[in-house]
Image (tube, rainbow, N blue to C red; front, side, top):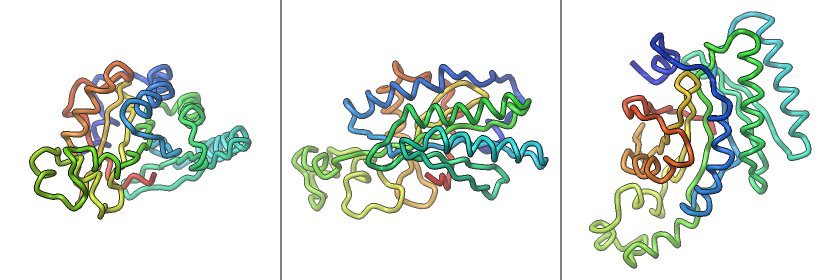
Length: 232
């Protein structure tokens, strides 16, 4: 059973909780100031579309509303369907002016529209993208080991840090995602690692400890399912 099966699950769940979603709009300050994790200016909401003209018209209208309300800040909206039949509505800010608050407002507007139309059960999750910054400095600070000093780094630096500070990163390395499960009303971190569908569980556990006071973190870790192929 995969993430989409769990999140759309037929078990005991709780509905969308906007105040829990908006926790990210303050939590990002702690991520940035204390942990050198900055917003990329991108977020997405994932849902199962309904093949009706009414639903599609609602989604088109919502896209226009988000574009119009976010025009001053340069917010962009785009949609795409994945191979599982789910739709990703991606909201982005200019890279030079990322605003987690604006992204959260836009994501909540979309979820409100879907729920207001009686389709709340089709909401899957919201995903906010972040990235580690100043990785070169971090490499220099870790026991004095540079990127090319594999002897000392291998002994003292955890695997996730080695991946993030390596000079040859694969696409997606250094990214940190926080995923909000609408059915559960909880967040959890997802950190892809270099390689084919690899993740850094060690780093995710560290983020859980660091952000537990800022975000309502999913307590059941077997529900921290990865989302591969995230388009942000």
